[in-house]
Length: 419
Image 1 (cartoon, rainbow, N blue to C red):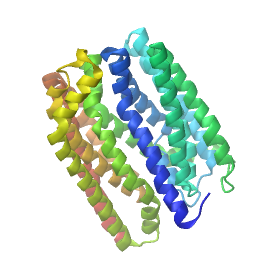
Image 2: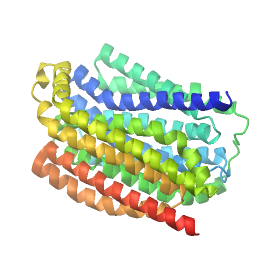
Image 3: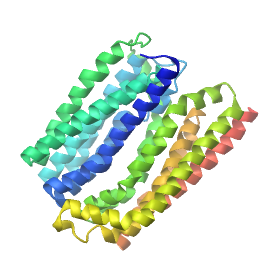
């Protein structure tokens, strides 16, 4: 599967490919659904796919990926991670169904959102295989899996939607394609890797959950904070507004994609430097990555300010005459969201730094405080200022989280050096 520089090149290229396909799909799918079946159904899809479905993905994922990929000492076997993931996926499906049963949505909206929950939960199940690829030193296989599954499921979904014009039916096709992707690619390929230990023990579920639960709660709260503005729009505005805000939100996927290209390939090196107490190299690498993310974020904000209006105007024309004049007035919100996306990319880097340092309690404390702030701030700003209020809420929450993570990362770097 490649050695030396060739393997490292494959890791980088396939990681870029997988990250790009996943982020591109997340960015444009709701836009395409709005174009094909209308703004109302597009808004339902946007909320189900990028907000509530993703929240249930996080429940299935249980925040274990950073723990698994940095478990170089093989504290837990792959079989243990797999058994744990099966249980969390079942829990996510049950939680999604329970929420939709009590939330009071109409039948079609509830059906679409539940199917998207299924789609995302399968994505969460695939993640345990992709994490093991990375832990075994085969990041390129993680990228290949992401690429293959995304192209297959998104292609099948769009084909079904264009041919049938039925959103629930297309979601069923997407779920089937997602299942096929895992069965055809992830399962057989991991079985070919010799170092993977498939043995499992139910007795290890409790300690694994105990080791990861703070990470899970933290990631779950992180996404709630990240999406608090979207939840507020769903609660206090209509499905059309959800669709419009999702379009305005699209650039954050590009920023996170670019940051992921930089962060993912060096996580193993940062982990090794920290564990081996190679602090000088750790700081140099962390500073370099931080600088790259800051530069990319600054460039994105400048481009959003200069080109945002014409880009939003082009999107209106692509969507059709029914959308004329609906997106260009959101230019201010567009710029605010891009700026907030830059801060989110920074905090994502320092989140991993704190995971490497095994400071889960610090991560949890930051998220716990910001969750309370988000639950108050986002609804208040959305009710008072609509989509612009949602954008301001997102920006202020990302600034506060980034400040907490950066301060925590550097503080515990100093603590670690002195221990």
